Length: 263
Image 1 (cartoon, one colour):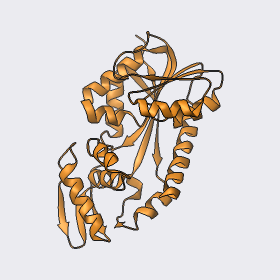
Image 2 (tube, rainbow, N blue to C red):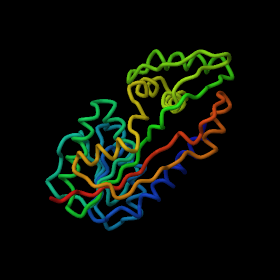
Image 3 (tube, rainbow, N blue to C red):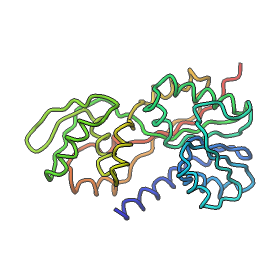
Image 4 (spheres, helix red, strand yellow):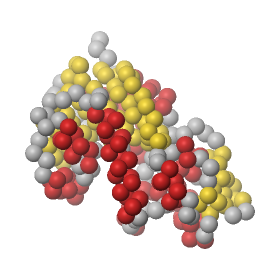
């Protein structure tokens, strides 16, 4: 488990490094900053910038304080609301936070959240998004190596609140849509009961690339760059201890770089 967490952090850092070339310095905000992993990377690369990290969790913001980042200001707030004057920031960043907005309040509020970020962005600024990407619809098969994994899947089907999981029982496993399969894979090793309950209230795979683009355009942005970010083979090899499957290329994140449409 420790090795897997280390790999995940290394992967996240690689994805953040890929993002840095699109960041415009000086006034930067991360909406949904969590414990500050991305803030630490940003702080190291842009030491002369003022960086604000916004999150609703005081516990996570305490972890940001513990990092002692000199040019970072943590702020407890709901980033779906307007927080800053118009044209404050050169760059606004959402790393793994928009799926939480979608899960809590839906598509329209997510679009409104982006529109608010656009108001707070300078005319030549950028919004950068990194989040889960919904795979194209197709059936896949999961084969369970042990009864415990099957029980966890059954609990997932019962307790996942974001949509009904439709599946077919087969010998040794289940057949279901790839989006639900990767949703389960992303959650089933939740380390604590609290993490599990939180995951059951969130969907990771909510937007296709086209849906991201359409939502961004409706919020007043032009899409300047799109890239897919894939999970490492090491991530999949550890999961295969419990589950056989055939879709490693369908667990993707997306990166979008947006600019304001100036009328």
